[in-house]
Structures are given as structure tokens and as C-alpha cells.
Length: 496
Image (cartoon, rainbow, N blue to C red; front, side, top):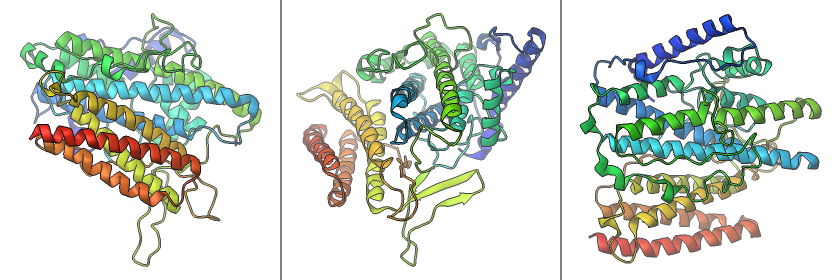
């Protein structure tokens, strides 16, 4: 994100500082051992001062745009940490416990995906540009909880996730875990933030009918928005398969379509509560992200005391992996480690490089499919034998599966050629050069076809190197692509 954006976030920073001072004051009065929830500013009582260069609606769009980027970034970091979990070094008697941690973290990542999609619904409702992108690493937004970093699951990285989702004031308690987490976050950044204050300002603006009038909420966008019956398949708490793994259970993934101000306010409030649960949850079967991350943190902390502080539940995978390019002398680009703020591991192993290229193409395909879904509705776009919207949604789910499958290969494939260390690769999640869709429906479908063809070229380069199991996956992937290509050709012919 551009550094000059920081000057536009003054209301958010002011609210964050006000709530921090209030929480410290409450703890001083109640005592550090108090378990009572700390009250924060009610968004409905907050009056937001609109910065110069914006009107109220445009500023709301700006804050939602930032929020979408944060949800995207957190989702990828949680996915990467979840994919890193496992390995032969985990004692047999603890393998199920560690697998449970993976289920919890990947479950939270799926919920972040729901948050990311639901924020697009709000942007769609108010007629603002959607945002499916993010900045490439290393980067840090002015209100990001901590600098974006793709890294293996360790107690320190987990501490950052606990902090990002924590309720107001928790980090300042005298609790031993809070103190440890504070040390973890202080190592990561000198200026940590929580997203709770950002939500409070967004909610305040949405609730302000003088600054945001009713006619800005366009109910006609409902048909184009994401809905749970389309995107929630298999993502209810029990169906996700992780209900047994968490401290109490697992909530549903939130994908909320909207028609009015009250819908938008309720949806964003629920998203905020699913993350941090600032007050005692009424439904004990739906623990917040904070509660579940804290649950894993405590269990991992205890297990490290037994197995040794050097033991980790994750493979030794790359940090911020990127695909190394050829230098002028023919050698491959080196990893970059400049202090602790800029660490990137170059993928040099030939097979891992090809899998990394394939991952990046499929990641771009997923984002393109998702963006395309918001310009298709259930009405006029569904005439004929093939439903464009259903095709796009099915393709998106397919890419979610593909990204996990390719990630599982990458975290078990060496980062470097033989004899150059024992670090494994990882999914690079490189942001595409553009996420703007072409103008015209036929051109959008042609772009999907372009990426399928790019993927095929990479698959052909992989075939000489892969194991029989991975070759079987690639053949299934090619077959799926061929089926989608046939549908795309039909849709292009009817879109002219």
C-alpha cells in the first residue's frame, strides 16, 4: 500500500489510541487479574471526521478497500502456516494433536476467505470498486497488524496471529501468555496494530445516515453478490471436519449477501466478532479466531516444554519464497536477507521452480474467477444449457483444491538443488501483474482460457520430474482443464 495512505487513516489511529488508553485505565481499576471484557467505543456513538480529498462515501470505500487487503493478507499467512505443519519429526503419539492444529488454522483461513468475499459484497452494495488484490511482499500497510510474511508455523509466528485477532486490551494484561505474545509481536514490528479500530470506524460510517444516505445502498446488486448457498458448500462448522479439533467447535464460514444499510452493518459486525469476539460469546460452539489461535498457542507452548524449545510442529520451509531468475552470468538469483524486515528465500530447485510457476498461475486463476463471479448474476447470465455463474463458482472451488494440493507438494520439495541445505520450498503466492478483468464478457472468458494454456505449458515441463503420485494429480488437473476449456468455448460463442 502507498505510504501516503497513512495520512488518511488519522481517525482510525485516534480511535485505536483512545481504546488502548481506556483499556489500560480499566485494567488499573479492576486489577490485572480481571477477566471481565473491556468495553470499546460503540461505533454508533463515534463521529468520523472525513479527511480532505474524500467525501464520506469515498472514505468508506477506501477503508473497506484496506480491510479487503488485510483479510486477503491474513488468509494467505494462515494458509501458509497451516500448509507448513507436519513432517516425520513429529512423534507418533502427537501426530493427531498436531493435525488438529492444522485443521484449526486452515479452518480459520477459510473463514478469512469468507470475510474477504463478504467485504466485496459491501463494496458492491455501495457502488465502490472491488479489491481482490494485495501488495507483494515485503510490505506493511499503515494499519496492518504486522508486516506481511509467509513463514512456517512456530510459537513466535503463532503469537503474531493471536495478537492480530485479540480483543481490545488483552495484550496489556499481566497474563503470562499475553506477555509472551507481546514479546513475539515486538520482534515482528515496532508499530503493531489491531484491526478492531478499523472495523469501528467503518461501522460508524455505515451507521451514519447523514454522511452515508440510504440511496447509496443499491439492493439491485444483490443478484451479483456472493451468497452462502453458493460459496458455503462444505464450509459449515461440522462439515469442515475441524469441529473436533478446536477448543469448542467451529463456526460457519460467513458469506453474507446484502440489500441495505442494516445488512451491511450486521455483516461487518459479525465478521469483526468472528475474529476477536470482544465480548463473551453467547454461542460456545462458535469460538472466535482469537480463542482458537490461543488454544493452539497454549498447546504448542506446553508441547515445546516437553520436546525441547528447538522442536517445531512444522517443516523447515522457505520464508517469503520467490522463484529465482537467471542472472547475467547464468546463475540463479540468490535469497535476500537484509536484517529481519526483508527476508526472501529463492526457489532454485528445478522441480520446485516449476511447481512454483504452476502455483502462481493457479492462484491468479482463482482470483480472476472470484472477480468474474461479481459481474455475473442468476438471471440473464444463465440463459442456455450452461450457467456462467455456476461455471465460475465451480472453477473457483476447483482452484482452492489445486492450491492446497500444489502447496502440499511444494512444502515437501527441496528449495535448492541437492547438497545445498535441507530447507523445503513453499507456495510463493506471487501477486499477478493485474487483477483487472477485460472489458466484454467474451474477453473475460478468453482470459481464463489464456491462463489454462499457460498452466498446460508448465505442466508439460513438470512431467519429466514428478513422482507417480504427483503425475496422477497433474493428469487429473489437465483433464479438468480440458473440460473447463470446452465449456469456455461454448460460452465465448454465445457471448459475441
